[in-house]
Length: 135
Ligand SMILES: [Zn+2]
Image (cartoon, rainbow, N blue to C red; front, top):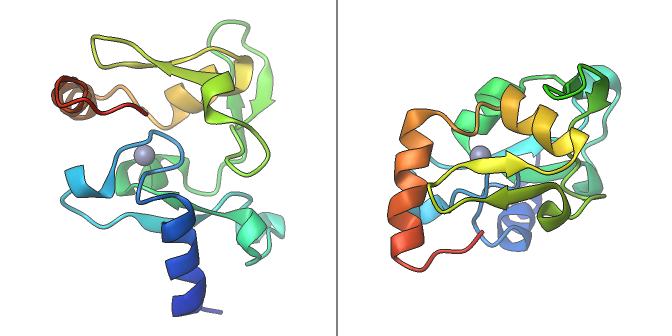
């Protein structure tokens, strides 16, 4: 079933237009951010707004139906960062050189799976940081 326009608008407003994984603002992205099922439908994730987040196209393509990944530091299997249940600032930080660093196992696994530090996004973050953007 397709999500309603009301639901999509609610998710966009709640996220204030920023990707809830990498924090890329919609205004800095050529392609529109998408509404993502945090727990995918194939894992019986619901269409409830508590299971939805706003997601840039880059994060969404890398995330796919994944709900867990490997912590690059410990090699443990860990759940991905959950934007509704966890706080971004407790799991990630943005460095002055434009990278996003995971500061917890979930954060590190999510940064790696979603390839948050691809060249294009790092370059974009540096420009945004110079203009006063904060995640
Ligand atoms: Zn993103």
